[in-house]
Image (cartoon, rainbow, N blue to C red; front, top):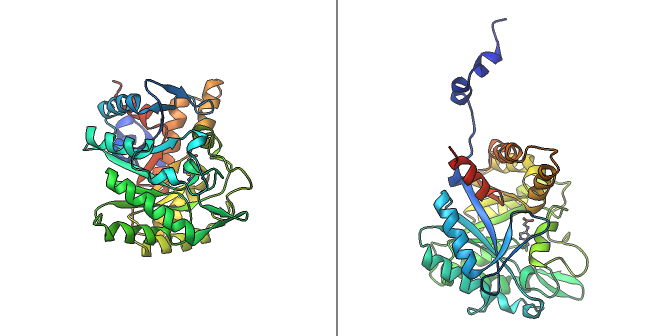
Length: 324
Ligand code: PBG
């Protein structure tokens, strides 16, 4: 045998020398949940180790993450039911919880990258990402709300705007609003290929944001489709997106690779709540080694072509890599 692939696996030094992909803390964005109140922190039952924090405790948590070497965060709000309405008015209230949190985080931690979420669901009494009219999610009327939300977030100090709503034309619409108001430096990470699947359950528990009727299939993509992801990517690219995201990640590695092969923008993968919950549940039962599985799935996302990974594991990865 002239070819013996095992020679390149014979020792740790050689294995590391030929390793093609590696996880780095600078790739990770840690999604976090903010809630009202003071001194409160509640664990999300279906996401062990992940909490909703009141703003004071959230700032402490971010400090700890920064000390561990994390530098990028995404923020989502958990609002009480009485703050929600049909038009997600609270989403652009400058004195509301979310925008106060963004301002406070950026003034305490000017050097981190803070990504904000643009979609109506956390603020919507219908639990949908857009405006509901006669049982339908109306696209163009929704863009107006999304534009207000994005502008308010930019004014509050957001570094990256993350439209997670899947309305048509929203990246271009938001880009224009931001540019017109002088926020040409605020980035957009488009949720480009966001699939209408079952993996978002724990996240909707975290925000109490499940749709009050129906599902999200008229705006999020069909999990059976891949070519359609290219159409979404072409549009987001043309509309000025700075990153193209695939969501969920683990069951959609082929989509990550597809977008990475066709586009020169950095590809992001969202390792979503349900993917986190699966690993945690198996690890808690002693059925999987949690740490190793975590590193393996995240590395697989890098191998598929993700440059950036949004993951609830970020803090744990940072702690693990820091351990001697
Ligand atoms: C909605 C939104 C969702 C997530 C982020 N933004 C869920 C949904 O579409 O219902 C899911 C994130 C996760 O599951 O971790 N705008």
